[in-house]
Image 1 (cartoon, rainbow, N blue to C red):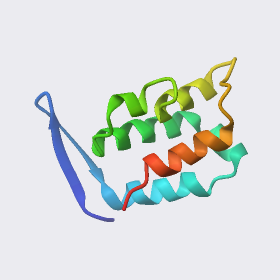
Image 2 (cartoon, one colour):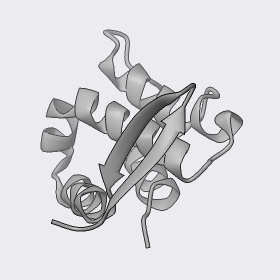
Image 3 (spheres, rainbow, N blue to C red):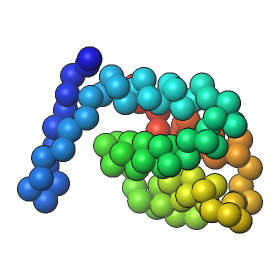
Image 4 (cartoon, helix red, strand yellow):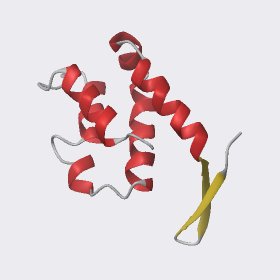
Amino acid sequence: MGHSIEYLVEGRKFGFDYQELKEKYMEFISMSDQDFLKNLVDAAHFASVICFIKNIPSYLCLSDTGVVHEIIHLMKENGTTTPLSEIRELFEQQLKLS
């Protein structure tokens, strides 16, 4: 297990293990499209956490072309007009952990 990092939000303590997040990122990146689509809820949760940790501006995460917004569109019955390959590229680039 890696190093645990803690932070406060409105007086409540939260934490994460950076190494575990990096491993989860690599797991998502290496998934086939079919497996990625089966794990959209986890992908949306992961994207939200990473957007928060990296302090990515909300307009880059939540706007119509934002990574979190696009993943949620994939969960909807009508889907999205954005190709899955573009969403996966956005996921890979924006959520990358060094």
